[in-house]
Length: 182
Image 1 (cartoon, rainbow, N blue to C red):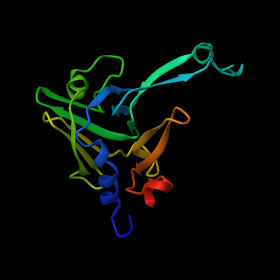
Image 2 (image 1 turned 90 degrees about the vertical axis):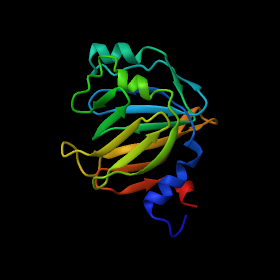
Image 3 (image 1 turned 45 degrees about the horizontal axis):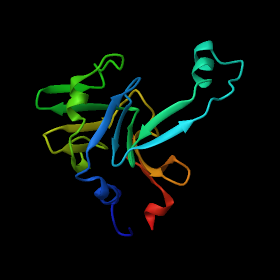
């Protein structure tokens, strides 16, 4: 994609996701959010023999088989501030409690992605959805400039894992998968 700005390259990478439903929209610890797009795929992580230095809780988790459903694309958001706005309200990274279900995340679930572009703040991004949902992301001073604001991953059917496509850092720099640059 020679001659294109990083924003244009990212918008080009998101073309296959436009009109796709966001599903399995969920929050995690801290500012983490994930959204799946496209067809579902099952991944299986076999149990792992934990090192003795791990806590009992971690050892117990590692001894389990983990079955996960992922989409053709996974949008992984972390190390940033975010706000989800939907018709009935909003949720943000400052007040989000990952231990409680959030209606705004549920409202975003099932909406079609219709646009991706720069937000109103420096190094910010805006994801727009067909039923009026908006997800805005911007850098947080709580994290390093080199931390990922968000990353996009794609299903790799050969290995049944997600492959890196692009990541955007808090300082505005962008890392692309080598194949995405061709």
